[in-house]
Image (cartoon, rainbow, N blue to C red; front, side, top):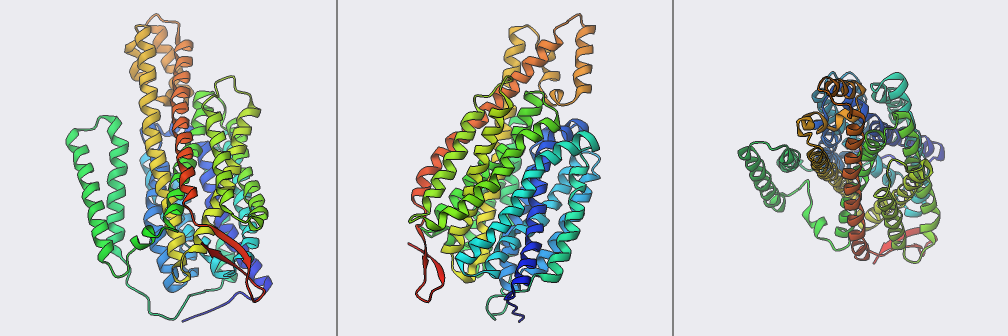
Length: 525
């Protein structure tokens, strides 16, 4: 067994810089693609796979996060961090080279495997380096700063690269960050393994059943509104239910389960995992569909939309830093969870009221409020979980927290995507029926026409040949339909945030206090 401790401040700093570059790379990828995605779909012609660009990434991450969280606990996290950086960087290059939407979705899945490995190792590594909670809280400011810096530049950078260099560069930008990350982690991150027990056998059947359960349900949600053959939908539903039942049966009997059901049963951890699920649902649904609202609904350029989404990313950092200064002084830190939900709820509510004439300042303020809310929620959920879970299972608990957030994100993008598509088509049909123009439904029924000037031009030309001169009015009506559809999604998000409030009440009470020996500790009640 190799046991190394980062005692020297310089090594601690350089090791944390390596972790910061890793976190920045993942954060940069998440924020740049949201702004670029409407343009990507317009060029590659695949709006039916819009949500899959995000969900393929999350589905693969969900599977890999618990696997490598457990492997990191058993063998140390450094080797997996290095492999993850290489895989993520190569997958980013493949994303940038994609020639159609299917290739992009598959490359994003490979990128999700690397991203899941990075999430499973990076956040738990901070707890390895700094086992004392107050010290860890101080160092997490550096991590939050890196995350926030990448988030701050991400939307603007994504919009700028998409508009002036081409959308492929939103993936190629990960390549230099990956090289720098690998160098720092290789040279400065110590290899830390807890205990000297032999490594347990990994639960591969559990991992396969998780993939089968989530993959089947994901396809079911995606294909249900597309009117796929009923037999196919029934088969997917049966497969998902059967695989889910087998998963629960197997995990209860497995000696070393990948999904430790006893953790889900703990009264102190279950509310935190539930909050993580709800946060992921709302966060990813907002991050992926607000760019569509701004570009497809409001007709903004990618660069303009990126600038307005930037406050979301910037104020995640602001909220996280402010939280770090406030939470340690509160008698009941759960108050910060209420505050985070409140800020996010205000943002979702504001977005339900925005139309074409919404001033830029109001959109930016809503993004700012959402950013502050996430900046408060995300680090506190990690802190609460790591402070409550047994130290020997720290990696597993952290991985489960990230996994539940990703499951929520996957469900959020799939369900919100289904809601937006269904509501948009319904609005289009209503508009065309009123004007006796249902023959144009196939052209207007795909929101891609609002993102691709070439398709809009072809539609206008077809109308002119048919003797109609109302192309501008019909396209404006289609934009209104998309806005109404996305407004519906934000109402759903606002309702889910409100439902999360009683879950916070059941979360454990964490006390930051001085230990008797003069050190700091965190205790849960």
